[in-house]
Amino acid sequence: MPTFDLSQTPLRELNQALHGLAAGANDTEFEVVNPRGSHAVAVGCDAPVAVSIRGSVGYYCAGMNSAATVTVHGSAGPGVAENMMSGTVVVEGDASQYAGATGRGGLLVIKGNAASRCGISMKGIDIVVHGNIGHMSAFMGQSGNLVVLGDAGEALGDSLYEAKLFVRGSVKSLGADCVEKEMREEHLTLLAGLLERAGVTGVEPSEFRRYGSARKLYSFDIDNADAY
Amino acid sequence: MCGIVGLFLKDPALEPRLGELLSAMLITMTDRGPDSAGIAIYGKPVPRRMKLTLQFDRPQEDFDGLAEQLEHLSGDAVTVSLKSSHAVVQLPAEALDDARAFLRRALPSIRMMSAGESVEIYKEVGLPQEVVARFDIRSMAGTHGIGHTRMATESAVTTLGAHPFSTGPDQCLVHNGSLSNHNNLRRELARAGIRFETENDTEVAAAYLTARMAKGRNLGEALEDGLCDLDGFFTFVVGTRTGFGVLRDPIACKPAVMAETTSYVAFGSEYRALVDLPGIDGARIWEPEPASVYFWDRDRLAGESTLAA
Image (cartoon, rainbow over all chains, first blue to last red; front, side, top):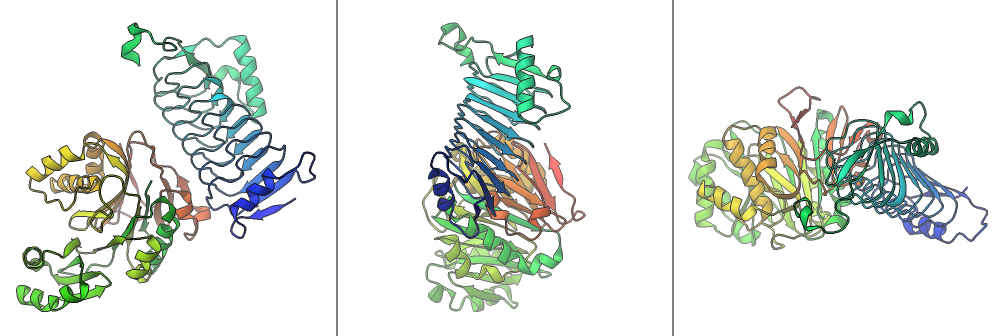
């Protein structure tokens, strides 16, 4: 298992090693030690490898991830898993603002809390947060699912498109055009699958409420001018 | 961008290392802003003495004879210690106002960086590494301090445009962000008698807090008032003689990480700034909440923190 000590090795060596993996390469597990809050750790992976990062990272860890499983054994700075395409990113600690922003696919699991703008402009990613999320989360979320076991901050789902939001705790306020929706059988099934994939146990899908778009702000309508 | 750091010590054993720890934190933040850098250090006060930190364009010429002139004015011993382009003047507390008036009148090219019982502020154009070395910050002891490395947006890259800004005795502030109502607020504060040295938005925030505290509000309350009256983006770290405060605006797009142990409270724009602090692996680390005031005061029991709002 290749190990990269970021207190000794430049970050580019790690990222180039990850980017240079040929299909079917033997190295499928990487370990990163002493990340010391470095930016852009393990960005742009596009092979089905597992990357374990022992410590906390700075901006944009695992951005644009495809296929890889990246685990941060610590906390993550702003923009973790930003624009993820596929694969899995797990943050054992907390995540700063805009975790999973614009993500198109894959699964982001945050075992602590996520700060503001979690899942902003999400486009297909699934995000499961074990703790709470901050304000303006899922702003303009287009598709994908955001699952929050704790509480959500102000203006959840503002200007939401078709992302589905599931919150187990309280929601401080809903954003423009975001409403609570009925939890139907299909949603309980979806949620059960997401919780299982995120390693959540002892929590029932029925404990959550579902929020989604009221679909009034999709297209400009002069009668809604006040809401824009 | 801009990078800001702060360190408030609870354990006196760390006090000799304040300058060293804070310097390392600030240098780590260099790539958040290369324009200018500054540090405020709160050292041990000397009873009945005040400190003035001055900055000179021509240190050799302006420094010459300064101690004698100030002694003549105050009728008591005055010490002046020169550090590169700055000098720290220690003088009897009752002579402070006369000394400031004299300096403004007789030596208008001298800039007053700070005044107070314990604070010293050093700031210049250049990178943190250079500024820290130039003033030998690493060797300084103290109880708390804050630092800033600047990427200029709202005013020119000059010494006076560098942070920290000090607008009241032993008060200073560093800022990451930009204020949008600083011109109006500057006019209001100027009408109330506050002097401004620059066109900088952060100086207005510092002066605003000074004005609130002059009205009897404590640091935490003044910061809370700021949430109503200051418009724009801001993460502030503020120092007073005994206090240390942090405030983020409600949008909170400017980054902030805090760490607390039994020995210290630390602030960094990023976690990177905190990684070399002693005992960081066991610290409580968190991102300060938007629109929430955090402040600590040395006059309270060590370890007690106050969270308002």
